[in-house]
Image (cartoon, rainbow, N blue to C red):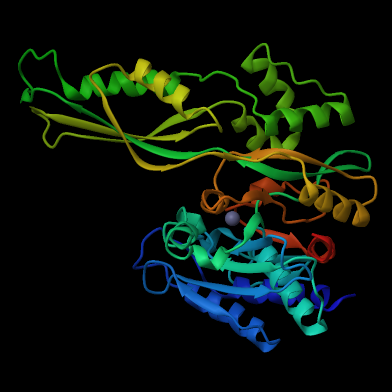
Length: 438
Ligand SMILES: [Zn+2]
């Protein structure tokens, strides 16, 4: 067992014990500095010159180091993980979410799969390479980041905007979410590589109209106009659109299993996707844009018709669909509804091809002979959105070989989040192969 494989479980456990819950509020998000200091100390211990960078607000700390490669004329590879986690309700768990307990073959706790597992693999390999004098084929930039779980405004997006020098020369990025095995049949495993993400587009709708007395006839009520528009939008089904990543996913699954993915109707496609088990949750949301109303607000007294009514809608748009999506939105909403983006982080997509994809495939096949890789799109968003802005091709591949019956996607942000110990060892070996041959 290599040095990294030897310590990866302990590093995962210790990272989990640092409470880096990201509440989305600056005042109450506090643990990232401690997590970054932990990583920084581990890196300095083996001789790295490291940098801690504060990204836009006190305590939002990120840790960086660089390992020079054999060929400095080649572009560097960014290997990144986020140090924050989503909050938890400890009472719901069977072990304390900050325990980092190692029991029953798992490491337990918040962040075990999102993504202190990958942080620990990256950290362990960074340490091993430095300690053993391993020279990777090209420069590796290791980044441990703040604020991914709230969208990265105080993490990756701030860094991309204010400190692009940290990523100088990086042409590709390797991070979450992908690389976990999906079992399709007896000894048939695939490892999805994330090559695309939908946008995160939060929209405010507003209707301004004539206020009035609640007792009188009034046919321009802002609440009524808004409610009708929200209902139309909430019930609307956007068209099926299969981008390259999603089509590539379906094609590969069909080739391996014979499952067909008919596209003549959304219902037929959804039915086929449902056969994929837990991963259907993610894949099902990547075949069309979605717009889900999530908040409503209007009025201040029962007998006053307000002048303004507002709603918030969570929109997730496919790569290449933004303009068409907005045209469709305007048709549905009509002329009386104003709309604005509260947050709009664009969709990203890169091709499932090239040397790094081949490297990832060869690495995982060396550790799990006969397995396959395939592209897929995330329905959510990650730090990849920030690095894509800097011109990098972004891939999500945090390798884990999982037991076939583990409902892995339910563990993300879920109760009893945990990662198999042997999957951490497996992932470290795969990642080592990738970083040695990238
Ligand atoms: Zn994550």
